[in-house]
Amino acid sequence: MPQIIAVLDFGSQYTQVIARRVRECNVYSRIYHYATPASELEKDGVCGVILSGGPSSVYSPKAPLPDKAVFDLGVPVLGICFGIQLMGHLLGGKVAPGQQREYGLGTISQDGICPLFKALPESFKVWNSHGDKLISLPEGFEARARTENSEFAAIENASRRFYGIQFHPEVFHTEHGVDIIRNFLMGICGCVGDWSMANYIEASVAAIRQQVGDKHVILGLSGGVDSSVAAALIHKAIGRQLTCVFVDNGLCRKNETAAVEKLFKDNFNMDLRVAKAEDTFLSALAGVTDPEKKRKIIGKVFIDVFDDEVKKIGDVDFLAQGTLYPDVIESVPIENNPASLIKSHHNVGGLPEKMKLKLLEPLRELFKDEVRRLGKELGLPDNVIWRQPFPGPGLAVRCLGEIRKDYLDILREADAILLEVMKAATDKDGKSWYSKVWQSFAVFLPVKTVGVMGDERTYDYVIALRIVESVDAMTADWARVPYDILAKASSRIINEVKGVNRVVFDISSKPPATIEWE
Image 1 (cartoon, helix red, strand yellow):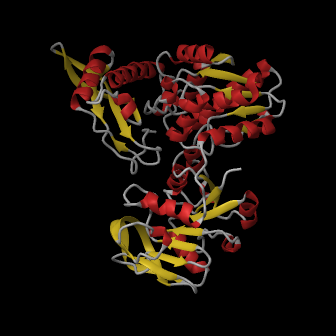
Image 2 (image 1 turned 90 degrees about the horizontal axis):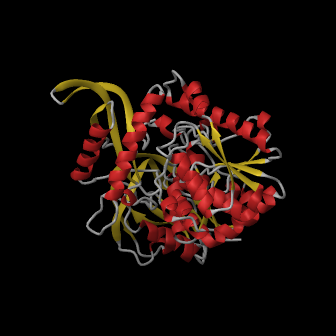
Image 3 (image 1 turned 180 degrees about the vertical axis):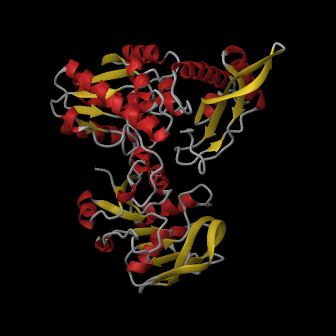
């Protein structure tokens, strides 16, 4: 059993990033609901607790509060932003609105005594995002750092190994942020940093076998990284007890079905079925324009198609899905989580009772980069491991407004061209631009614009290109790809895809935009 660092989630947009930074130090982290009983953390054997930030005030009537017994577990606790305010408030200090809010970069000055800042400069840049601040410390605490607007930017109770910082060490903007987290893990919690993907595979295989027993599992295989890695991991655990089903829903990329069949016939001895369901999906989506309704319809039809496949196969007990951590966190309803719901995911949540299947989600505690490393360990080919993320609802969320087959056909061709161009283009080091960015895809806009082709007026549709850089999809920025790549993609799409006469480039970051358009 690996050492576990518990990250209590109070609704911060950076909670998942905290968990990632811990794992990057080769220490296993797990995100828990903020109200998780201390007894559960103790049962799990956590060796340290991190209190995340969050949007609330500690004095709000609906403020998310932890089980106060967390502070009696005898393990180190680190409070970040809202977490330091919680710690101060619950242990006898005082929190109040600051005379001036702190958002963005600031400078911290530390006293050189706190082990959190071991071997770090006396002052450095940090990222702030708060309005309230500590104005008096609980008994036993000392101030260890300050910023321009806060004399208690870092605090310590050395005897109880409690620490609080008002800034966010987990974000890239904070200098030495990973060093601070590593100092907490290794120097304060006593972690040894021996967690690896090999450990995860061993533990997951054992957990899958225990959960499944001699029962049968069905998995929806999309050909993307998540479902492919999930399939490989489950197959390693239970072999032919797994049946994979590829749903040809009409919302896939060009030649997707053939590629999936070729991949898994060449690499794995899996029971793979293909369900032809394009007409079913498109009929259900006819006339629907609202993005959330699209996702829910796709999810429902997906379940219905699977229900039919289960009946054909016979005795099936589990439905496996490639759900990842960001899917789980973004989809938690507001009443159960202090963070806001961003969008629903069709592969997250309960199944209809009529289906009588239990969920098996072996990747739900991993981030995308970790899934890629897992896939490598499992022997999946690079063209699958490094395939860019593709949304569960497929092209339905990249075809704005109504879903029509002619729209999808246009989008498929445009998207295929963009991917060809991105894979063919290389940087000065010979690396393809497809592998340099997080995602690159086309979006169909149901808007016609005037153009001129061959001295004749045209009135055709618009394709938007979305190319972003990211580490984990929690934040993203538009990629500064060379103009000649954009020019080539635009020229080929307009010349080769009938029905398109204009191509635009999306230069929005996440936040405030999302990566997908819907």
